[in-house]
Image: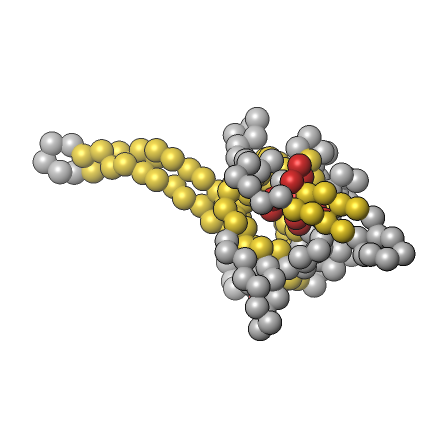
Length: 192
């Protein structure tokens, strides 16, 4: 097969949001372009490095007498997604990073803006569903994580030289079908 430059994609977010978050059980999209269910909320701007997908596949080599490798056993598998939330006063971001029970929101009044109080503690973070939206021209890539949990939050730096960001790692757990995530890809090349 010949090389095809139209098959090479860059990963830009959709203007409606690159990362969406919703409660477990919200209807999940099964195509690259169908509108997500009403329960999903865009988490706003994501850091310039975008989203990094990682996987860890641990194996154990079985050797026969004499040292030949005769089998490779998979002992562990995990899938993770890393990115940086940039919107510090976005309630969805705060609830994802600190847990919804730890974020209290009071609506704006004539004398204050919207007030958010965040309790910082060691409570386990909730399992959520995530959608990652990527585009390149008419091509679309959508990653759906049916059951994800923020497993790591990086250091938060407060300085006048950079924006406040929440670097997170989302652990993708297996669903009932045994899959950690789904990728839906539409090359955008429609027929006449």
